[in-house]
Image 1: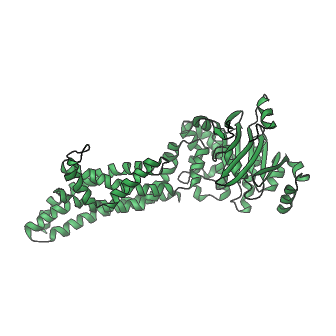
Image 2: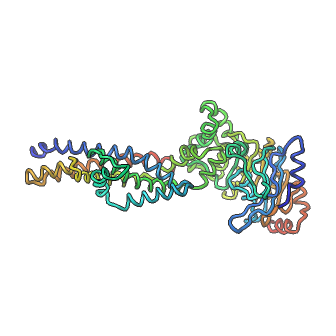
Image 3: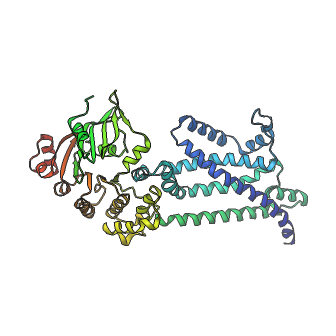
Length: 216
Length: 268
């Protein structure tokens, strides 16, 4: 027990890195994903196809590869080549990757809204923007909650990939202690940390779903 | 393509324009021509019932009037303002988008499937457009919204969500919602077709009440009772054409066209 208490400190520190990456990624990837989805369903064929290609690229290659690319290879790419410090590089990779997945969730949500809602709004004089903001997107939120819950829980666990950039997230902190002390207890404690985070997320999404269920 | 017909030229020269002037409307979906030159004028305070078999193009015609569908050829004037007119090649050209919106805002519409906003309560459904589109303050629109809900008999449901309402109640909310935007013309697209028979009465009563208040109405319907008793004129469409249009008493007593007679017989 004393041993567990002694390793909670460093693991909690690792969790902070994990949580920071998690929240910043969400804050960037949700709006970016929404923008991508709106372009994807727009009638601007070229832009829509470009987004389609982007989503294919982001979903079609491993997130770890993207991480490594942005950190190690991006500085050598002509024109866009910039050298990012490790944590910002991780943020960029995660935000770009998750935006692609979110875009598909939003697109599915938006396209599941009945055409009659658009027509109902149009005959009342709503512009496209007003229709989206006031009528369509509020209904989309409810429908995408289950897949968004899935995706955010995956994100919590995907954050552990940043060990490849030598960032001390929860899992890497645990591994460090395991290798130092020759015991697997830190892994068990780390698992408990992850479970706690996903529990909070699950609870949060269930509450949201309940709140949106009032108009069923 | 024929030039402007007599109706159109009379209308444009008249001092008071008709509420709706539709002239020689053509519309096709792919290779299928749904409207083959439909003309109709709707005067202020008039209630026209458009009847006809399924697939006759009557709903499409109605939807063309407020830009839910675009026409391929023909002319549409709303209260004297042109929404679309033919160019030199005989293809319909619409006015600028802002103008289209401004003109279409004068028409309220009620749909077969209500199209209420499910995430908003009854009251919110009614006040949403005045607040968002017209920028009216919530407190300023509230009395009017409540008045409209009282009128359609649903004030006690103001805080209910649409999913808790019957079809007839939904449709009455939809009517109140459309009226909240103070339209000059109300378009009804088969407003009772999705309702159980015992619920059509309450919706038709609300529509009759509107007609009694001299609202200008164009109603696509299968309700012969409504067409006979409430409509001032009845138009019969079949195969993408307007076959005949007469004052309702004459229409039912003395239909001119054999297809109208056949349709009326089939309805009895």
